[in-house]
Length: 112
Length: 114
Image (cartoon, rainbow over all chains, first blue to last red; front, side, top):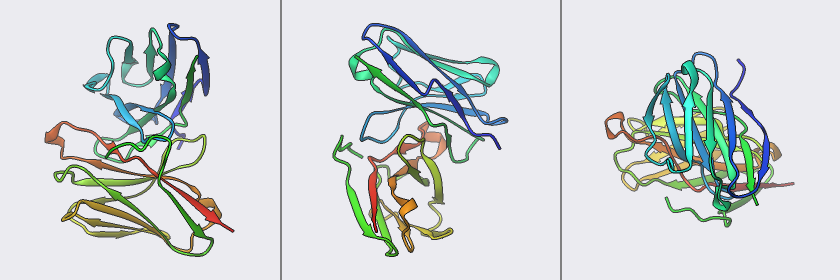
């Protein structure tokens, strides 16, 4: 079974620039999550999709972050404009409903 | 739980010894718990899970213990190996009617000494 694919692996941008991350979940997984993991901390949920609908975006900073899940499969997460405190690893995870999350290896974002 | 920032709790064990990693969870209504292992540069990897109707579950070299009375979860690793060196996270999930997702703890760094 192919795992969750994320790209790019690394991204360095200056503050106030925009950036986008891409995620391809495991085939057949209805639920897709984006997590933010700041260095030395546990992952924090940003948004959860079930198929192509948003289930939970209560912790997404909507003034600068946006996400979409195209046709209930791939997803993109965008930050515009980026701030220094957005430096983190952005993890995508997918799962069948009610099952453990399968994570990708993340995109490490550095904002300078 | 509260984040400890860069100062992750650390556990150092000798190769071959048993390891016990502890986690205090926050929501007494949580009914599903997972332990994840995260190696440097990789995403968290599922190790073992347990539901609240159990107090112990065993896998290959790993055992999870759940004490709902004190909201405590532990992961025991038998005969710890160098490949077990990683950061370990517990995650809790309340029932679906709470509308909340998995919440991760701050993590514990396990270092295996030769």
